[in-house]
Image (cartoon, rainbow, N blue to C red):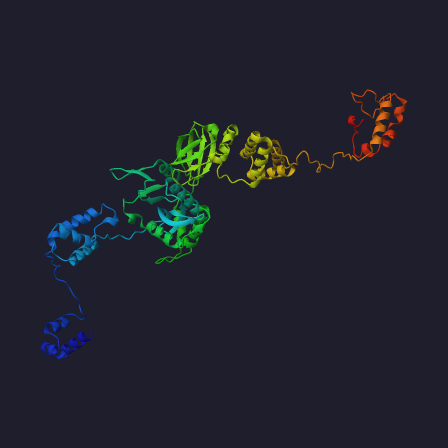
Length: 549
């Protein structure tokens, strides 16, 4: 730049171009160029670069690269592979550099240019992303649902074990509850959980569950072009944002519910941010979105997949490659199934017969031990080998009760132990555990005793053998007395010819005194002489046992 200034000043003050070239030791062409431009114009190519050795092979290279668009990304041609194939198959004699330069220029020409978009309030975009998380100590892949409101950039994120149809719908239901409103329209990709088929005219044939969801909330659905994520670029960017900011470091939670509660809190905190180029926070712009959205319906949509099945001979129902147990009374019957993201509900006719936590494994078997106890009670020899009872974590008191029952009653004791377990069909494990421990303490080893103690506990009344909490009942105290006094009393009682009204005559001893006998008048005095064994200390009549005579 300094040389430009000096040359231009010298010529403007009267120095000729020849003298300037000689004085500054540059060519006259350079002087002319400096006088034509106030600053260096830089290098300017006047004609495209000629590639005489490559031009004959350009069509072949383009064909190979076009075919690459139909194969996996990691199995496409590199510049080195194109160079090797041209030399081996086409007799190419040029160098590697011109191949590399041509492929770079071709890729630059193919890159798409986008139009900036403005988003009116009240509309949304939805998508799923993936990340690695640790739930319950197990590292696994999480599929997280993201709903974005592009006008305000407010978002909702919720994680699931799998991106199935139920997860799509459940994510929407929770997002609508989070915002307290329903968007007018939502942009989706062409996920098979939502779209079963793209017709020739470009319209989408929706799945049954997704169509019912849209009808329930009155949402207008829109779709991006297949393979064009930029058609819903706002939510695509938020998927990456959630992965980088909410999933780093790897989240560790005990349950999915705890993880989702934490994600929901992160979405609330993000609403306090002000994004680049905006003068308002996300929460302030969200108010315009909410004003343009529809109110929530009276009840949320039931996010479940519905199917039908038949109970097998082992009281199992298959749903999504996994088997779930039902009570044995429903064996070989037709049932209906509702698959939620967290549980599987099975029913027969109008009755729900089984509920299980949903398993996301493949070819898994989920048992409820209570379903098989009635059958095991009949086939008691299968108790030790019954697969539904394997791994059933019961308190130690149950094992002690079974051991004592089998020791005292053998096979019948095993059957009574199963009857004790069947009490869990109607009562909680904690209540039954207390009843079993009480039975062991008092030595009442039997089903009837355990059931009685359990009912007393649930009904909050004491066992019938415990009368200590009834102070209003008459109480008699039996004290020790001598055998001589008892024998004397009995002898005098036999000698009485008539019965006294205060003494009840026993059918087996007609010799008791009668009321008209004059000797019966001194009966109270004789009773007191018999000693303290028959002294009455409470209210009500004192009955003299016949065995004492």
